[in-house]
Every structure is written in structure tokens, then in C-alpha cells.
Image 1 (cartoon, helix red, strand yellow):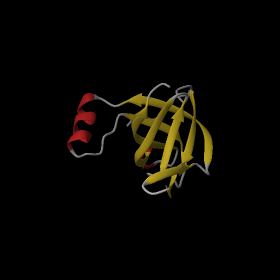
Image 2: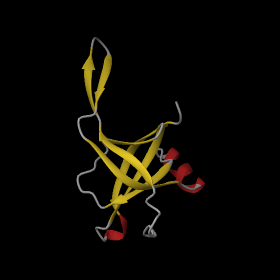
Image 3: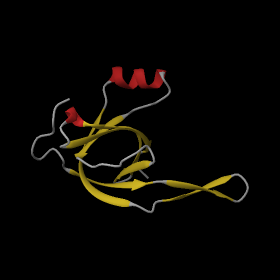
Image 4: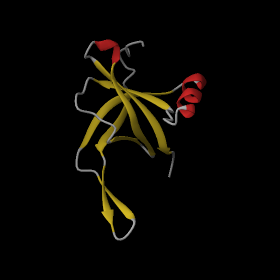
Length: 111
């Protein structure tokens, strides 16, 4: 994958850890104790990647690039304006420890 160039990390996102707790009888309550503002690049994946991810039941709709950040897991979500993305996979872009790439599924678009 290509490393983002100057100016491509142009979206201000919130990276938040999601914790779900049982609530009442059969409901879940979500809490977001850790929230980190970051600059990011957001791009939709191509049709082949999307199709392949759907076939293995790990739907990926976008890739999000951030400056290298350790400790991100699939417990995290990314929020950009009204869009919410769930992290599916995390990787070190080209193994250089300069950028982290998140493969995510868009959960909410708009209000």
C-alpha cells in the first residue's frame, strides 16, 4: 500500500474504545471511556475487496490511515462527523511503524 502524502490526513476523527455492558434483561449499554482525536485519511475500498470481505462475513467498507498508533484493537470505533465505523482489522502500513491502517465497516452514515 502507498504511504499517505502531506495533506492527505485531512479528516479530524475521534478514535474511541467501545465497551458493552449488560443492561436490564437482554439489552446492551455502550460506554466510550477512551476517546482520542486524530487526523486521518478515509477512503472506500474497491469492489473486489468489499465483495471478498462479504463472502467471509467480515464486511470491510473503508480504510482509514492514521499516524502510527499502538494498541488499537477491534474494540475501537472511528467517528467522523455523522459517520461511525467499526474496526475490523488493524495493520502497520508497510511494516514501517509510521502509519496505522484500519480496515473498517461503516455502521452509520448521516444522522
